[in-house]
Image (tube, rainbow, N blue to C red; front, side, top):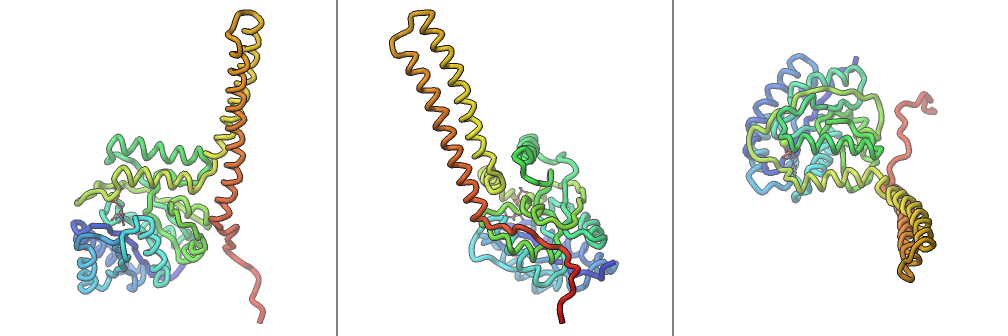
Length: 320
Ligand code: UDP
Ligand code: MG
């Protein structure tokens, strides 16, 4: 069993002045309990990441930091979006902590799951994914689109944890490897499964946001989903090639049909030639675009320069 780890809870905040005090109150109690039961080190902290808020969020974070020693913060020079803010927080926190949990400022992620996450870490897991057990509190629209999205990602061959957002525990070791992922289009929840290591899942029920409004309007959400798909799958490119082949096949049927019509009936002069040409050239062009797409897909994955492997243990001894 590992010794009392230092825990950092990283929370990105964008215009969250309405929720910060309550969040602080609840997390303080939670963290104090964990310290008291000797589960985590007394050096543990909550780290707020101010993502260029336009309201009073940063001042509030500074005030909380002065009053409570368990709370600290960093601020970004401008709004860079949830994923970037989260990354900034994780990369800073890993220099101070052994384990890092990321969650939202609005307490939608049940903070009682933290303790269970730490248990799994103590059992030897390096990543613990928080997965929502049900979406009873979501609107019908959100439920259908979100679950559809996870299924679609799976269909595209992306290794994504179903119904897992960004509530997760990672060890320092994982974040150190994560630093080698240089891509700029972030979709963190898809990137962590790429790292590997022993992982597990903790189920929790997601609450409603208790104050303030969602900082993820539909447009941002669609952009995020699109980023997820295009950063992790080249299947859409390959799809073009398949359609091209299908059209080429159809063009053969059209050819047979056109010749049959020409031989049996009176068709307008030039019709046979035109209809065959249109389908044949259409299919050929589609396949050509698909082939170019294949190469673009290759260039794309090369430019991301993801690590090709990660070694988790070495049995060799260092030479003296
Ligand atoms: N957030 C952020 N920068 C942004 C948008 C959101 O740091 O540009 C933070 C926000 O403060 C919250 C988390 O991301 O802590 C999730 O946002 P929200 O709760 O609004 O999303 P929802 O739960 O509605 O999907
Ligand atoms: Mg929320």
